[in-house]
Length: 198
Image (cartoon, rainbow, N blue to C red; front, side, top):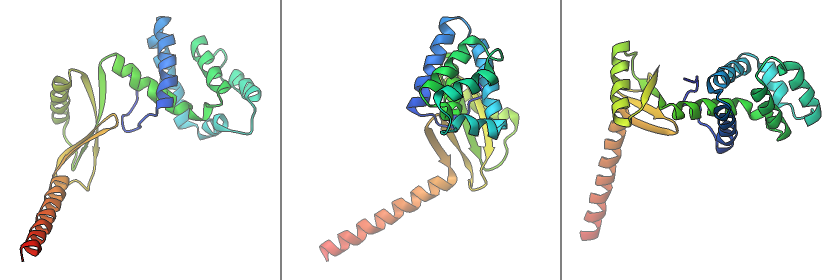
């Protein structure tokens, strides 16, 4: 299972590059190995801002960046991942590498039938409650669901779920706001009717 978090939405470009890496890894029977390297590389980029800035640097030529990649990664990652990094460099997209790695994990989880979900609640739920929610979602979606819980103090009650790019809001605050808007609309409609018939 990857370390992707659905709140980090991926772009079509991210998914295109990630799908290419996934297909190569799958074709060579090295999905687990590549997934492990992808997670290590993603963590390295998160932990090392200077590395991220170096890879995103626009002043270095593709050739200069190829030398940088060779010094940093040759012999330290699999040949497959190293080739992928070189392709990304030739397309001048190393600055977008973190997005490609996140998208790889999302696609890998999807391939394995795993769905990662962000759960937002007004207060911290205990593990058994989170497990019940994950189990219920898993049954409804026919997936193995992994839930990442966050506390959002602005929620009055209920919960919000983010599944990929989709937000499902079942919070009391949202329901109250929807009721308020409905009452305002009904009031406006009554005023229009009164004006029209008066």
